[in-house]
Image (tube, rainbow, N blue to C red; front, top):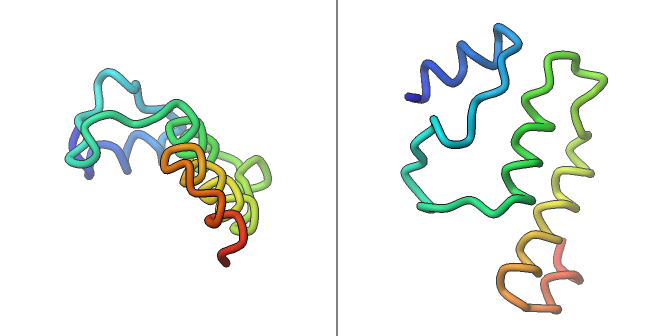
Length: 75
């Protein structure tokens, strides 16, 4: 699925299929990042995470992937 098709699918309330979407980088996306992306694609804005939640979850993913516990103190 290309970027344009992805945007159209999300606008139409479709959740993109993980296997059907080709990511340029990274070649594989960890489950936690895929889940965050899906949460951000929810149709109703009230169901989407706030920016503060997105940032926190991205920090958690970074710590998980790098093992850098100092990431936790960065903002």
